Length: 593
Ligand code: ARG
Image (cartoon, rainbow, N blue to C red; front, side, top):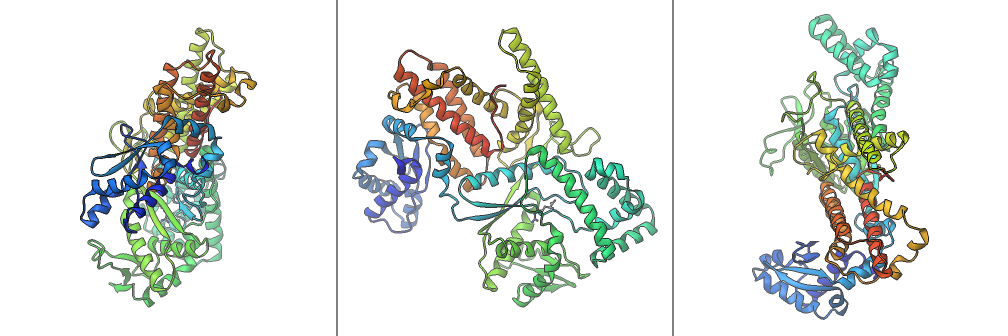
C-alpha cells in the first residue's frame, strides 16, 4: 500500500512504464490530473499531445498504453481503466482500493510525507507583502500578504525550504518631504501609539507644504540629497523612521499571525547598484539612451522598443536597479533555486522585463538563473463595483478591516448563542465567543481572499464572507466542529483500532466521500504547480459537501460494529484532511462554535 498512497504518482509511474513497453519514445509524458468524476478518479492526458507531435491517432496511442497496463497485475486489483474522448485514460479506483487506502492513512503527517517529493530540494525565496514605508497598510495590501503566506505554507508542506523576504520600499523619493515634516511637526505620543499613522500624517503634511511653498520644496529636496549621499545625520533619522515603520507594519502582521525571515528592503541593495551598472554595460546588455541606461529585448513584441530603465539620466538608481541587485543576491546569498514575487497585476511588465534582463545577464556572466515566477493578483472591489474604499474615500485600513470582521463575527456568534439557549443546548461562554470571533473574523477575510482565483478581481461583501452557507470559512469551520462533536460524545476506547474493525465501504455516499478524501494529494500538487490556492479551497468545499451528504444519508452511531467503525473512520479521515487543508490556508479549526 505504501507506494500507492500518492495514487497519482503511482499511476504516473505505471503509465510511463507501459508507454515505454509499448514503444513510445522519451518525449511522452503521462500528464496525470484529477479526472472528471463521471469517468474516474485519476486521468492520464499525455496521449493527445504525444499523438499530435507524432502526427498519429491519439486514441490508438492511448489504447496501446492501456493494452500494456493490462499486464500490470497490481493495477487491475486497484482501478478500472477506460479511454474517453481524444485518448484520455481514466482510472476509477475500486471500492477495495479505497478501503485499503483509508485504513493505511494515519493522518496529517502522512499527507505531508506523501507530498514532500513535490518540492524536495527546492530553496524558494518568497517576496510578498513588501509595502512601502511610511504608509499605513490598507486593503490594497491584503492580497499579497494573504496569498503570499499561503503559498509559503503550501511550498513548505511539499518539502521546500522557504525564505520569507519582505522587500519593503524604504529608499524612495518620499523621504525628503517626510524628513522636512518629521523634524518640525512630529507628535511623539502618536508615533508610539500608531507609528504608521503618524509617519503617513507627516509625509502628507510635508507634501502639502512643499506644494504650497517653494522654500519648503527646496529644503525637502536638500533633505533627499543628503540622505542619498548617506550623510550620517540623515542616515540616523532614516533608520529611526524605518524602525518605526517596520514596527507599525509588524503590528498588522501580528493580527494575521504572519512573520517574515528577512526585511531586506530596497535600501539594502543600494551599495550593489554599482555592480549592476558595471556588469550590464560590460556584458553588452545595457545601452545609453538620452543619458539614461536601458535594456531592450529585440525578440519581444513590446520590449523590443519599450525600454527597461535601470539608471536614470541624473545617474540615480531606481526600482529596476535594486530589483536586479535583489535577483543576484537571492541567487547567490540564499542559493535560491526558485524566486517568487507576489504583487498586483499592474507590475507585470516590470517583472517580465526584470526576468528577461536578469536571465540574459546571468547567462552571459556564467551564473545559473533560478526559476522565477511573478505571482500576480487582481483588485478587491467594493460592493459598488469600484475599488474598495472607506466612507472618506480613502482605502480601508487593514487594522480597521480586521477589527470590523471580528466585531461582526462576535455579533453573529451571540445570535447563534441565543438560538442555542432557546433550543436548550449548552451555550458558549463569553470567553469562548471572544476567541471564536477572532478566529472566525480573521479566517473569513483570509478565506474570502484565497477562495478567489487570484488573477481575477472580486467583490468584498461582508454578508457573503461571513455566511455559514456556501464556499466560506464559517461553513468549513462549522463542518470541522460538527465532526469533532461526534468524537467528543464517544468513549475513547470505542475509537481504538477503528480501521481494523471497519467493514467494507458500501453506500454511494461512503464511496463518494472516500474518493474525495483520496483526492487531496493530487489537488495539492495542482495547487502548488499553479500557485493558486483557490484550487485547494474549492476542493475543501467539495469535501465538506461530500461529508455532509454522507452524514445526512448514513447514520454514524449504529448497533452494527463494522458499519459504525467504518463510518467513524470516514469521519476521522475527513477531519484530518479538512484540518490539514485549512491549516495550509492559515485557518485553525475550532472545538465549538
Ligand atoms: N514595494 C512594492 C510596492 O509596494 C512591491 C515590491 C515587490 N517586490 C519587489 N522585489 N519588487 O508596489
